[in-house]
Image (cartoon, rainbow, N blue to C red; front, side):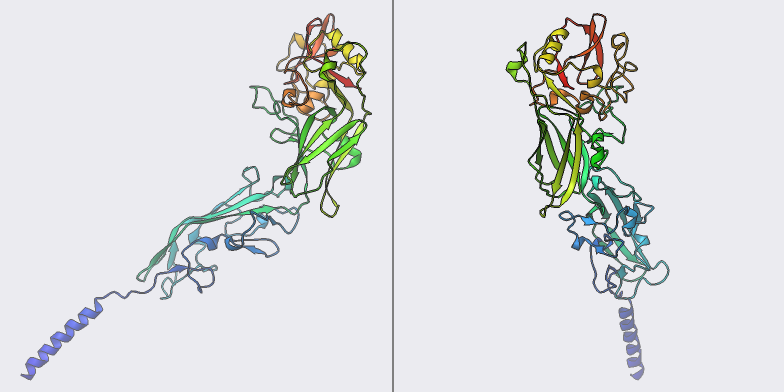
Length: 459
């Protein structure tokens, strides 16, 4: 009997032990953490921080740079001076190379994942930097106020964190991204003076490059200021003018400034209209002009002659009256057109004389040269302004002709200008006289008895 009981106990004990040891021990899954293990997170947002050279750190939670861009501590800094997890020589990095020491962006309550290759993670962290025009920017590029604010976007994919041992041994996290808007440590300034840009690039007519030098002309933005020194304002656009022509000042590091409504010098007025954000100021020139009734009138019919040259300085001030932004230019030539009235070269010259002006020369209107594209016998005998273009079309420059500066005239709707047709000049060869085509600045000789438009010049 005792033997039977002993056998039964041994049997049952063995079955009980087998039942216990066959159950898997469930612990806790590994997790992402960005505070030394105090908090577990299910988002990769913690990878998306940046630090400035002065130690100030920005995270997605503290990022309000879309409203107030981040200003770098020092002038002349590049994006390599902004700290982040993405290396300076790359635009992306695998999260697996970030998760371990010294960052230790993971935790496991059960102690799993220790040792060599004990923890692994899938996913990537990537970086994108573009300027305000969405042009890609290199990490070592120094920031400039005219291309700001820059957008620094950090993006982390979703992924899985996995330990070699433990049950469960994995957890997933979601993708995240954030964009930091960044400005250089630079004062606001005028970046461009933009007249009509039509016929100012190399893409509008096949084989024709209307662009000036890159230090003077940007086909998307206009003329680049050449001087901030009042003694050299004559180097800036414009040097020529006519009634109701306008250009826009593109302001970098924009803020709402107080601009004068009007500035008047010698019979010419510059009217200033800033936009609501402070990024642009429209400057409209008004001055002596012929009325429609004067277009058809012949005989003594003087029009006011402005005093030239005239220096204009446009100053934007802050609320305390301090000058923040300045732009200056010097007008040395004023043009009056005869509107839609076409006539012979002689009659147009007489009309210019009667209003107290003169018919312009080719070089007053364009810097085209009788060479290269659009050239031939019909342009021989006249010379455009200097520096010369490489062909019989203008290339956008300052102080190199009226059309060269202002571009296609028909895009100034309130200037009372005729169609995009030929304009007479005083240059002649035999019985022919030269005309200039305003849309591209090319010039040709025509029979002087033909009827074309005219711009009259002073001086």
